Image: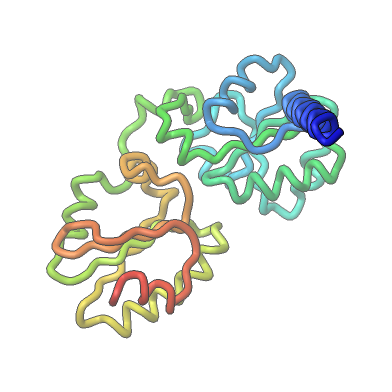
Length: 242
């Protein structure tokens, strides 16, 4: 009897997993990888592609055929009404934060299928196509610090703490005063460098940075510690030994 019950349970579990998988595959979008995002976008004839970064970010390089609506604009909820709620929507930003918020707002507004990708940082790192206007990004002039110039900046006998950030990034804004305080308290042995990821896309790509804030600590030009995301002062000091 127990054997039958176990068999029945196993079959039920398998069916529920299979059904759930089918629901997910047929379902309502969600977060996908860069490759999955590209594949789904290319095979969806009625796809609606939205870049939810600022106009400046968009002009600096975006996915082909993407429409730009700033997720932080006061009229975002009004602008999305111009899209068809019954057709798939593909949303992205720089590192996934704003696109996640935008996607959730669109779902609440009644959009049935919304896909999110990790962001332009991950897209660039994967070597995917980016356009600026009608010009391929590959033909565009390099912008920001080169990797060589960056390595020269961090080559110091003092510790060099590098903060990759962006003006629109809320965790970055929360982290900034913490880093400034640490740099003042440790001024005798530490230098703080802030890198705007929007102004240094090629450097971020060269270093495979896909989300911000992102911290690196160097000593004598050698990387001794790195961290992704927000961190408290106590956690940073304990992790680095500063």
